[in-house]
Length: 355
Image (cartoon, rainbow, N blue to C red):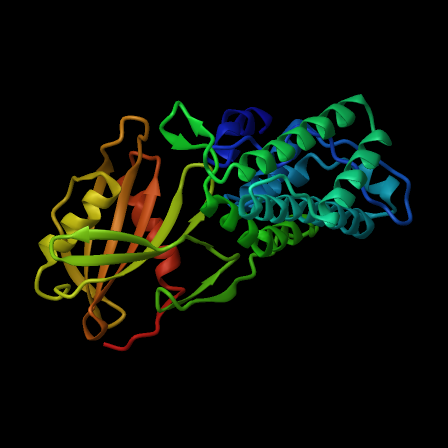
């Protein structure tokens, strides 16, 4: 299990910045009753890193791998499984609050054009250091690296995007900060699920008004900033949400205006393919999806740095002249993998517009 998560460590890093998810620091409990500071295995720490932040995700396999390495000794020293779970949840929430305050500080620094740290961030950093000192040398080193990474994010944010990588693109973008701020709820739900002694696959309803949908899911999707495209004579505004299912698979849902959506499906497909830099590998298959006309296609990425397959369901919303696109991106040669991803979410998707 440890080797598996080490292999996927790079995927934990938020694009363009350092890894902020405290993935190398040993775990120390913010305990009220028990003065115990057990350290996690490297595999468990990797799982904790994976559930936090904008790209966070958690599934049953990860949950079981985490709890398989919780020793009975650690549970006994905590006073039992319930106490262990409470302490685990408390510390995960502490980390989430620390990361959230980092993003808040980053936003204020971006706006002001200078380093700004919220009082809550300063206080959370102090607690982070104090807990590390009560643990061991590795925890102290990890805390120092955590703090250095977070301070660098705030520093990069204060440049307002002027610090560039290889003189081409900003290292920090404002939408990354917004995604970080919006990710708190999802992180807390995943933290609660991980800390419970029994796997809980509970789903919640989430409304995404910009896309005109309601979705039942384990945790919220990340909402992206609207993107404008000029396609022919029409300006297309794309609203999108995304969710990392695991290290290799992602689901993205898009909605955009498309005046000719009912009569010009070839142009609609071409727009989507060009937008994502893909190449079609199957012919469009017409069908019906929840009372609306739909097209199902499979494609492959044309990006040399990305070896991904895509399964897409394109739904035309005739009355509002919009298109809804469900995109499963998966790293597998199994052609059914993308369809399985879509199937698992489609049954929980409600389109608010009637046909």
